Amino acid sequence: QLLESGGGLVQPGGSLRLSCAASGFTFVNYAMSWIRQAPGKGLEWVSAISGGGDSTYYADSVKGRFTISRDNSKNSLYLQMNGLRAEDTALYYCARVRLGGDCHDYWGQGTLVTVSS
Amino acid sequence: AIRMTQSPSSFSASTGDRVTITCRASQGVSNYLAWYQQKPGKAPKLLISAASTLQSGVPSRFSGSGSGTDFTLTISRLQSEDFATYYCQQYYSYPLTFGGGTKVEFK
Image (tube, rainbow over all chains, first blue to last red; front, side, top):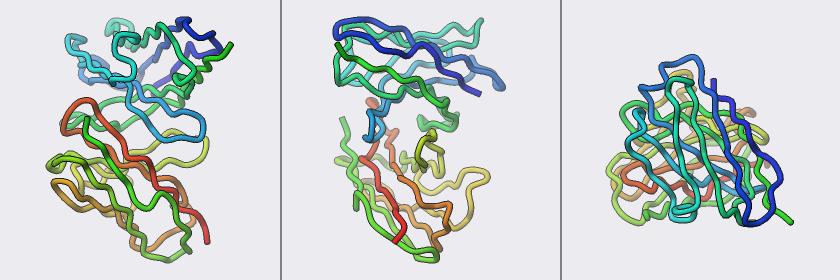
């Protein structure tokens, strides 16, 4: 199970930290991703992190503003979002990366981030 | 970044129809292609990985094919629960990218 939290309303230029609590699997064995979906739009991959946390990847649209991290002792995934823009408004999903290939076999229900003044 | 283009973006179909959705990559992705189904208000569900490998529990009426740049998702006989939006995703290289989605609506 994946349970996201931390979403909310934030002003442009502000910051927010999303969390994802994982259970039911050996968290450290899996890479994890954040994927977002703007209202009424398609899916956009945001960031991924390896199981050990030593490798991270970002979409160009968030590079330099967002930071992905994890705490394997707490079975938790995080997304620190700085310099938020209106176009970052979306439902943010936490997703498990399938073993053997970087597609996503389990998803949370998402946490909504709204960037507006 | 590799661009994924799905067609059509939406269409109407009836229960029992054979449905084919196409996904094209801007460069070759080998077979590193996944398909997802998303219903309104729900998280996406992984249907197919490696272009043609059906995930456990996914009905056999779903199938995937293709390699390189051109891929298809086929639903052999559309059921009521299949009306949804379908996305492809390449995982050949980072950044990972999704297609724009194909919405299958009831005719």
